[in-house]
Amino acid sequence: MREHTYLDTKEQLIRVATTLFGEQGYAVVSIDQIVAAAKVSKGTFYYYFKTKEDILYEIHVRALTSMLEWANRIAEDKETPVDERFRDFMRAYVNELTARQAEGRILVENQRYLQGERWEEVRQQRKAFEMALGRLIEDGIQEGIFRASLQVRLATFQIVGAVLRIPEWYHLKGPLTPDQIADTFSDNFMNGFCVAEGQ
Image (cartoon, rainbow, N blue to C red; front, side, top):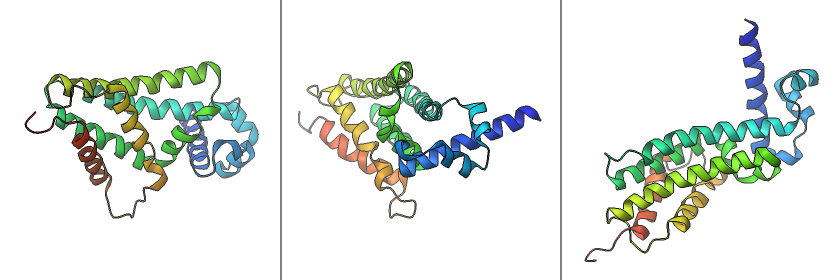
């Protein structure tokens, strides 16, 4: 029972902080705001976290760990055609960020507040995610689906940069579902990446 309460309280603090950071930005949210919204004491906060940055770090690591899991799985699935894997990757990416919009905004806007070893760990996780996407693009080049002249690193940055902005404008009641957004993005990118007919 004690362990269950411990986890519940910690998760509540993380959920509340995620919402506040996503809506207002890390810099302007205070610990007082977090504990008030979570309905716990300040002492309880410090029992679980030493600083506000501790929660920011936890949010980044959790989000990136989840993304890395499916990104590596799709990138390493050599049995599925590259064009299908690319669409699967885009669908997973868009669904992740639309289902967790607050985390998406935090990944884009608040990473600069992480310091030292924490920033380095998060940076390495982000790099690993980009490398998984890069391997997928490289497979497309090797199989003759994507242009041989395609610069993998720039193509990767183009995709990541575009998708990470989705939480800024996506609305649950909007005209397009996450899968429809992902498929449109896939079509747009692949039209630019693919070898033209007759070549």
